Every structure is written in structure tokens, then in C-alpha cells.
Amino acid sequence: MEDLPVEASHRRRPQRPLHRGPEGRRYRGKLTTLVALLRDHYDAVEADLRRFYGVDLADLWAGELSLRRLSAYVANLPAESATWAAEHGVAQGLTPTDLLLADIFHALAGEPHPIKPRTTEATSSAAKTRHEALAAKLRAQRARLAREAQQAQEGGAAA
Image (tube, rainbow, N blue to C red; front, side, top):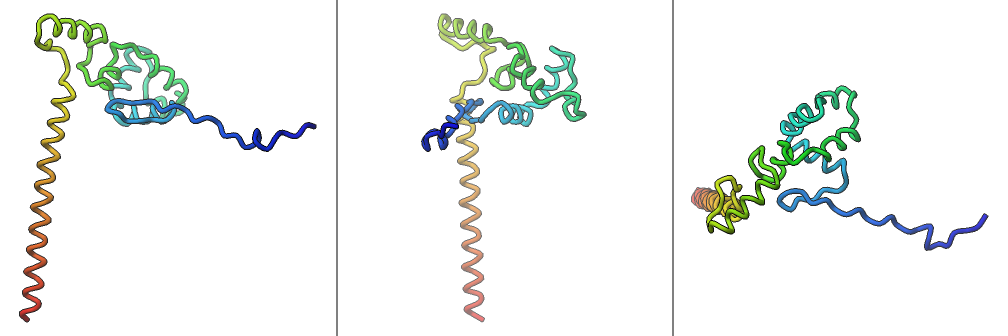
């Protein structure tokens, strides 16, 4: 029997590439991506499985549907599915073709098409506004707590 070189016996398996989800989220592997999809869009996945494959998602919990088969079903859902729409932040029923046509309309007319989803700028500005409001509330709370602590120290020192 031939001995393997020390280097070969300790080689690491190359790391798998990260799958990027919406909004820059990263998932590693099929199972993790599937679990995240079920967590975020359970109802859409359930409706699509029933609509396109006649499969009940409850069969997963009953042991009649394997994770491998569920993963294959979800990976091959068409672009018209509610799951695709939910993952990409567009209205249900819109296909990539519809979105491309809306982009052409925008290019020719100079204004966005009504079906076009909100831009990320609008979404990020709404999140920024919310963040600023929460930060202001936090600063006010910290100031109130500091005043109360100072009053408690002054009251304790006077006694």
C-alpha cells in the first residue's frame, strides 16, 4: 500500500460559493437557502407548490415530502410564481419579460411605468428616515435617564 504525501492527506475541501439572496443576504448551500425561503415566504411557497405541482407543503411535516424533493420543486418554479415575485420584490403575476418591457417604456417615455416596483432608493430613504426617528428616540431616552440618575444622586447627597 502506497503512503499518501502529508500534504494530500490534509488538504481542505474548497469552500462552496455563497448564494446571494435578495438585499445582499448570503446563504450557504441549498438547505440553508431553502430554510430561509420558507422562513421569509412560507405562504407563497405553499401556494406555488399547490398551484404548479399539486403538492401540499404540510406533507413535509408529515414526512411524505423530502427536503430534497421540496428543494427541487422550489428551484424549478416558473417566473410567474408568487415565490419568485416575493423574492424579487415585484407584484405577483409580473414576469421578467414584463419588467423588461417596463424598462423599455421608461427609456422611451422618460417616466417609470406604473407596474415598476419601488426603487431601492425609495426603500433605502424610508429605512433611513425610520433609522433617524429611532435614533432620536434613543437619544431622548438616554438624556432622560441621565437626568433621572443626576437627580437621584443630588437627592441622595442632600440627605
